[in-house]
Length: 230
Image (cartoon, rainbow, N blue to C red):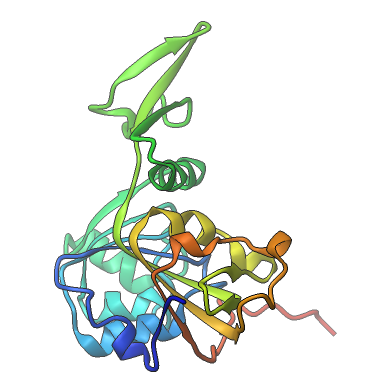
């Protein structure tokens, strides 16, 4: 049985100023909405956040950004967030942009205990400045170091009381890798079931990676609504 929280505020109580967080999600798909809102209320600051993007202006990680709680953002996409763009251009926030595939592998490697790896992505670009390169089979590769975090926050469709998680379709995105790469992983689930109710073949994140779990409803906002023309 893993720690089961009764409130989102209780779930984030140990997240401290200056912590490094990994947060699941792609755009607004699969983000841990309740945990992010609890961090906004908590007022924790000087955070380093590792996530694909920084939400939108009024939702997701964009709320932490707007509240000036993020000191450094590590991701691959600025996206639809005008406040993020403003803070970057004004020098109010430190940003590390990483090619999306490299970001995924840096997180995966961190969760697997692999300290670094070589990749062709970024060779000959500003991303390679100051980094070691090496040639393999006549091709140049760039050494990239893995990412880990003090806390990982993910959202799943279903979880059991042991901490096994199942994600829903594309809402899985970065979350399995992020869950493995955090020293402490807190999972926000839509449905909490008894141990044994999830077929082991369906588990995306095994319970060994999860330290705490909380059930909560999500708004599931749409980042950019597209409708068919009449």
